[in-house]
Length: 529
Image (cartoon, rainbow, N blue to C red; front, side, top):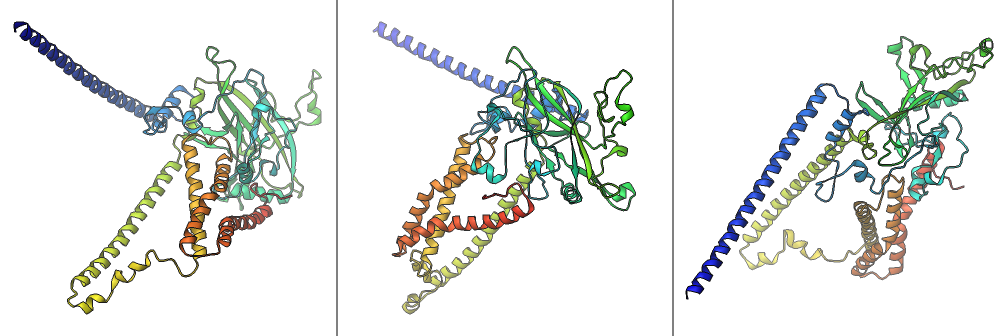
């Protein structure tokens, strides 16, 4: 008996000890979590104060310095998260371009740059780069590593894989070098002036990185560079506005080099500074120097002289004094600068301070408020109508009054009654809507599953078109079921109408718009020849 009591006492003391240890462990874990959360809040507060001091000190966010990169990373901290709950830290390259890997280049390796569409935010008509009076396209063959597959979407959007006339070699600086001389007639000059008025910008890419115009002093960064600029008559004192054209381009390419991590270099930035300059040609007497060596034919573009924007040397966009064609001399220079910014963070500068975010948020809130107000208005009308009808039903005293159907009782039998007319049109529209909705749903699903890469131009549009075709079975099934519910018999006619109704409308609109796009020479015009 004594042994049993001792055993029970030992078990009780053992369980009590376990309970106390478990309580202590839970309390310690809770304290640790609380202290970790407090430490995290403290670090976030200190970092916010540090970033505020940097902004107050005038630190820019578009430079390639370590401080500017840190400030950009802080402003984009909410975008650098992935996962369903957006809790995992990630770089913008992982968020925007899943599966993209960096390219390494050895010193002296030729790196091709590619031209993109010449676009404007003021109009929806893009043009090809080589439609402009610029240097001709190089005839070099694109290496296999730089090629990308053509698809239907990129063709409809006007994207073509063409090399730029500029030559870039890894870590190879290029002093001022002339490219070509172009003669532009009055007709093309008038067209170029229209492009300048509509603020068209030229876009290039190097290592899949769009060219960027940035200014540390003004703290801005925009993609592409303008064709030219216009000086208003009020600022020049002349009677008419003056147009000037950019014909010299200073390219600055930043790269990262880390022999312990990878071989070669990785490109982390691609900037351009356009210059408008009327190049001065050296006279024949000055071509030969005293030592017999040949000089560069243009004094404004030599290995020692770099063109700058000067109002006295701007290149005016107009015909010659006697009506002859305008002569444009294109030139460029390239400088390579080393930077410590990682390859994964090279996209930060393209998104920091983007004005489009506020516009999108305002549009979303505006749409939601309109939906809420309309829903409230409709609900108010329905409630008032139902109240009046229900009050009328309750006031019925006699059987004769009860037999008379009023209000909502008049339409209760028409809810599931097949329509007497236009059952074919109803079935086709509902089936087409189901097909379009299914195609967009599967496209969004593929995007969420990282099956579509935004860096591959036209891939999303191609996916929408292909999924719309594959979802034809869904649209046909919905249309056939609804058509059968309407007790209709011409099922062959319904099948054919469902298949060609929406595509015929889209093709018709496409053909009409394509005629106008072809007339104006837009890059999105599709040739059937």
